[in-house]
Picture 1 (cartoon, protein in one colour):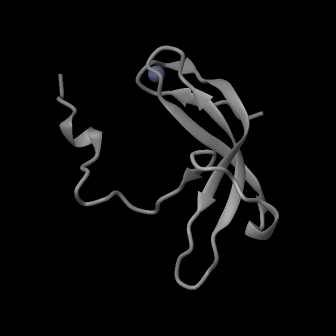
Picture 2: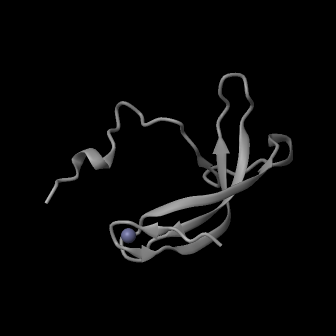
Length: 90
Ligand SMILES: [Zn+2]
């Protein structure tokens, strides 16, 4: 199993949820797709990632409730700058 490491904390992340649903939104004529992954969380700083995609569900087989699936996005929104841009160098 691949275990992510939190770079700032130098700790192995902990798997906090299996079958984490991510919605890949409709784009360029391709219909939206649901992907399953595992959520990993850093016990020290609380950062979390979803890794291990591999299975998908067609929208006709799955209708998640509101808030049940993470809406994946391809780009940073222009009105919401990355937190990294606010990080100060020490
Ligand atoms: Zn961390």
